[in-house]
Length: 278
Length: 175
Picture 1 (tube, each protein chain N blue to C red):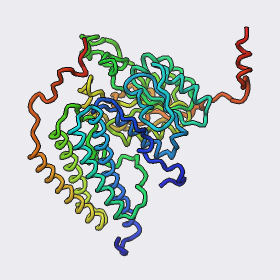
Picture 2 (cartoon, chains in turn red, purple; picture 1 turned 90 degrees about the horizontal axis):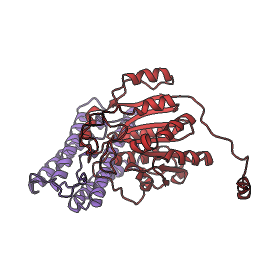
Picture 3 (cartoon, rainbow over the protein chains, first blue to last red; picture 1 turned 135 degrees about the vertical axis):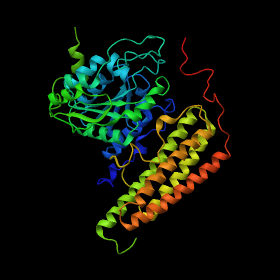
Picture 4 (cartoon, chains in turn red, cyan; picture 1 turned 90 degrees about the vertical axis):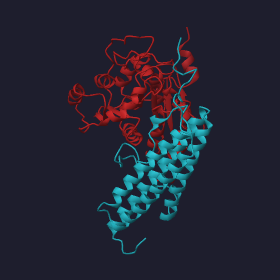
């Protein structure tokens, strides 16, 4: 039981009354469940947590929780979340979205959020497809996936490698989870929230409608055979042989989070207005 | 509880009962989620069936709480405590279909009960303390009974016809 009775919220209490409209079988249901389990295990209170998203199926997630939520602009979830965390460092800020939102439309924000290392947790539900717009290839889609009318012979393009990019850009905590393992995913989310700085979790989350073959990920996902490292060089070498289905923490660094000092500069509306005076 | 239990034996027993509770409670939560999903997709017959299964699993969870004298449920465990990625009695999320029929839901439930029975039977045959083995054997017997009941239920439920998942206006349709 919780040492602090006031903080003893159950996972169910972190869910809102709004029922998800995802397709039955979608992996995002488990990610929602994992987030609520992690928040309960962390003994947080809903009013002290903000979940910020962009656009896409998975970006609907803030509405399904009882925490503060912001369903933002496509690809701009990290920008909004960064502003929120910098202005309200007391809040636990979680950003959530999909592979299209995060790696394509929001790709540049992803790089710079890793580089800035603000104390956020970024959860990407990766199904390697744009589901909401009816199944176009996303940055993580395999080059030979030919089931979309937009790319009848496959894109022929090399996939985006989120963990490689996150490591190269300076993310302070990098992990991969699988939605078919909700308890393991919850554990990784809890660790990511606890870890200072920018924490990134790539969650393999099947789209059973446009990528039904992803049901087979259950047989492919497996715990990573090695412990997390704080050495970026070692983490990079591990990624060279990564099969894309290693589940666990890859890297947990010790870089100090970025948090600008507050309480100086323009504080009043009048001061802000004065800055814009011509 | 037996007063002869050693401190270690008591701890193992309590841990096992927490695990048993989590198994039943996770199953209740999963069936409730499934019922909600089916309601959202207007598959009300299957939603009702999942709601019923959730109620049954909930009764088992409540029974464990009552037997253990817990006033509150144990805190959620985030560790991998199962043979597989999930509790044996939780149906995999990806096995749903918006056009599924009651028979499919029962097939899912049957597999869950079979996995739970196997899991508990293995504990009953293990080198765990005697009272853990005894309770695990009782629970395994209950799961065997559930397997029998679901099989009977399936006999009374129409089998889906070929093409049950055919949708004339499928979500994947694009110009």
